[in-house]
Length: 306
Image (cartoon, rainbow, N blue to C red; front, top):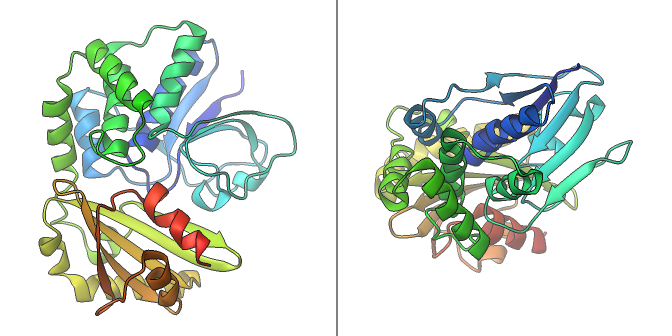
């Protein structure tokens, strides 16, 4: 039986990794031959969750061969996916993002819902198949929901995310608030990242009406600490857009305790960001109170102003 590779987007976050693992677990319990993979290094938050639940990291892959059967989780845009995805055989997508440049040559299973986390959708798939979720997998899925909804505080969070999160916590025997806060804090330690590494911890490319732009996000408990390296961060962002021929780079520095963000913006189309967020950039920066979600509060408003 041919191996099916299951993976999320490049620069993987906790939802991408945990959803790949959970989806692989589900497919294998259905008798498939599936393997979870990742398209980049594991961040500290994800590593904390994997170690807490004694789960190995998925295998790192850098490309797929023509015709390789794959399942995409937590993304659908080819620019965020594995090298060679255009010629792979996509058999399923499970996602909670907007549908971008996605296309296939054959009909596929496509499951998308406007919820805060891909793992929330996968929980429903376990239920539909009447397959029991084991405690470790429940803990990993819970970690994904906590991460993507910032412990249910993000505007992307839905009632379904909260309901599923509590059910998973019960299965995993986890105190949501205690565990969730520790996991989120683990991801805020940015001390040993170089500026180039920092802007790639969680970064995604987008193209709208011919404008190529990048939106990266880092979580912190102190925006001021991150801004101590502002000059070096800006230089890394400038280098990135030159190397990738992009028009705009927005770095979202999110305070997970106060639920606010500071943005650093570089590129030749900074005017798009100013118009989108209704701000005047000062020294390439602006403060965005209440903004914590790239998916719901950043990318859509940029797209509307391109």
